[in-house]
Image (cartoon, rainbow, N blue to C red; front, top):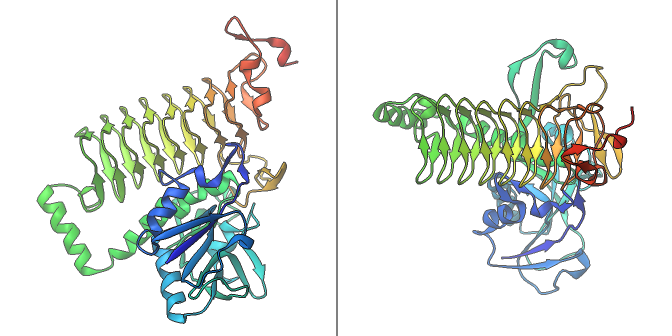
Length: 414
């Protein structure tokens, strides 16, 4: 089968990069798509629009390259489409809570047509056709949360929950979708599937026997925690699965890691805590750094005593010590973030911040929820600014205004 990739050239703020080049589950999106499609497709063609799709009569899969989906979703779509043996377009029910709650805000790629939502993925058994029937895929959402919180923080529900799909699908058009693809629709979805598989008695026995032989706790055995080559984990560290750890990783004493993806050549020092997070290749977390549902792209560093919740950090970025990313609006107003040049509701009750590529964030700063910092920006604390209450563009970078190692005070009027 041939795959036809429709290029989406829109730049995702604040990275100033197309979605296909951003990291999802520690891989560039284009590479993640290629790996998932490898067993289905033997050739590919890239086009700029549907008008350029080749006219030859052959089985083909057509999709836009800003889409995030995993192998479980694709297997369901391909299985149903091939069985139907007709031109199909991926579609979702209006009752699918994972799509309507989390996938629809801040995007246009998943749109209502008739009584279903459709997206830019098609299957053609005998070459391109102008009309394709909607093929509804159930993402199998499950309401999941990780802790109980006071009612005033969760619209009187008492719990902060996500509609976590077993078959995730997103159109990545905003940095919030990068967060969703990595955490709630990424490793949280993987954990959801693993938890469901443990309902089977044979899986329970397999994991229990392995844990017994390895003399480890159930969630820490090699069935739940996959570790790469030349990786050192201190005996006092606690690592719980499902977790994937790459090659040449060093995890220090007293660390707690649960349900994470850790890339290659990563150094996580003493006392760090990571939960439902993705740490990209070559990243570094000094002592007492903490990540919760946060994504670090490759070669980034989060200094000591800094906590990131619901955040996304671009590649080659440094975040200094004692930086605070707040994630809950104390004024109880809807959280908004920048989309297409204006503030739009993010569709989430809590949300951290997003830092672009090649940024340098100085120690001691506090970020309001949903704020973004454009790539290649330098921010340092000063007498007149310690709280980042607005989005920061490259033109506002402090490296334009530094004199003798200090921020030029005229840049920050009182």
